[in-house]
Amino acid sequence: MFLKTSFTTVIVGVFVVYVLHTCWVMYGIVYTKPCDSPKGDNCITPFLAGNPKLQLSIYTALQPNAEGGHTLIYKEEQFDIKSKFERIVNVSLPKKTRNNGTLYALIFVHQAGVTPWQDPQQVHLVAQLTTYMVPKLPEISLISGEDQTQSQKEEALQERRDGDPTAGGGAGPTSKAEHPVSHWRTRLTLNIVSDHFLFDREYLPSDVHRYLRVFQNGKKIVYLPLLFVDELSNRVKDLVEINSTSMELPLTISYDSISLGRLRFWIHMQDAVFSLQQFGFTEKDADEIKGIFVDTNLYFLALTFFVAAFHLLFDFLAFKNDISFWKQKKSMVGMSSKAVLWRCFSTIVIFLYLFDEQTSLLVLIPAGVGSIIEVWKVKKALKIQVFWKGGKPTFLYGKSDESERRTEEYDTLAMKYLSYLLYPLCIGGAVYALIFLRYKSWYSWLINSLVNGVYAFGFLFMLPQLFVNYKLKSVAHLPWKAFTYKAFNTFIDDVFAFIITMPTSHRLACFRDDVVFLIYLYQKWLYPVDKTRVNEYGISYDEKPKGKTHKD
Image 1 (tube, rainbow, N blue to C red):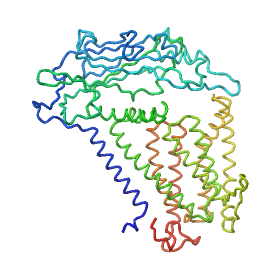
Image 2: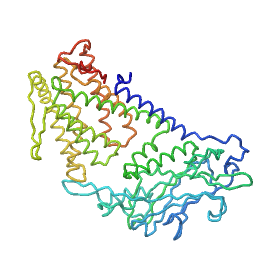
Image 3: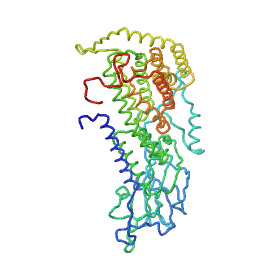
Image 4: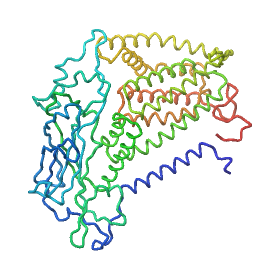
């Protein structure tokens, strides 16, 4: 029984177990067992149940422990836990911070009418208002060498600083530096749990424990308000570079109440992002993951998880079936070699473009793996054999038979017609971009021009295979299992196009592929394959060759 189980069945089984386990883990995160007997000794009661009068005070300091002094930048004297608000304050930067230093925010929730230093029942957290990051290289006109004018930079930064006349100019010469410089986080997002939840000491969640501050009130144990600083809301797009002339910078203070379940979920996600940074993820890579959580509705985020899980499954199955198809392929009859070459070229260009744009690793890694597989396909399609002699490679090309030459004629004819349209459009677009747009370097212009041609007109290079199918009146030679999985992934990519941060051209390419797959499906309906017999090429790619007992 187990010997007859296919590899695909095993993978699908593992996938189902993984999804069910993840659902159970997520349930354990958002659900907290309450204390059954409110008068029991094991219960920890909320301080907020007594409706105390509270005050929110925020200070800045050069040290997280406030050594060396602190400065009050904001206070909310009549602080209502359930009232959402947003305030913008101008923060004066100390000289050390302006000289590539750091600055911290000390957030206190304490009883109204007294300072937090005099209140024994205050709760506080420390948040870093600065972070270090390598500045983005400036873009210049490659023809004139002209950079963005200083007035444009100052105007853009002036708008972000809410009309502050003492604010310094934007990125100066330090923008060209290769070392990290201090950047200002323009947002500080605070949350407090508004639920009057009774914790059970025996079932106290470990993630909440580090935020819990308790004190003894007679026989009762009371916990202070659960204060939380939302680090996920700090996005790279909101950072402002700090230089020696940045005397004041704006800080947007946002507050909203939060449920206990959402707090626990946010703590786990924040810890996960921090762990990724410890493993070498940059601030920009972590920012892409933050965007998934911050910019997406929580219910839509749950849907995204299931979509992403299926995307991973279909990606694996598509790679597996595609590799199996090309591994067994001995003849290129009915297959467009030009389309194979184009896919290889386009995937490499897209990978280099995404790398140049410093795109998220969530997009970059699959693109790199796809490029390697496409190079291997070209080797199979052109029947290239590599021999190593004395450390130098020698290439041997195989010969084509009569049927393959006929396919090649149709393929060449299709490319001839496409070249009349494609080449002028690509060259014209590259020249226009060179004259009117700015780039970091000539290499950046070249990669952008190539990738714009791939994205805008790349689907035209997928048409030779459609033309070959039309001439041969057959689709039996195509890897339909891999095509099916790729079709599912293409429609899933449409969902991710609105969630994961990526270049606009890459986002539009996801929808372009939908049209091509629909045409392939129409041809499959138009030229049906009779699976009860061997196809017109003497083989069947949808059925396994005789003599193999393994179903996969």
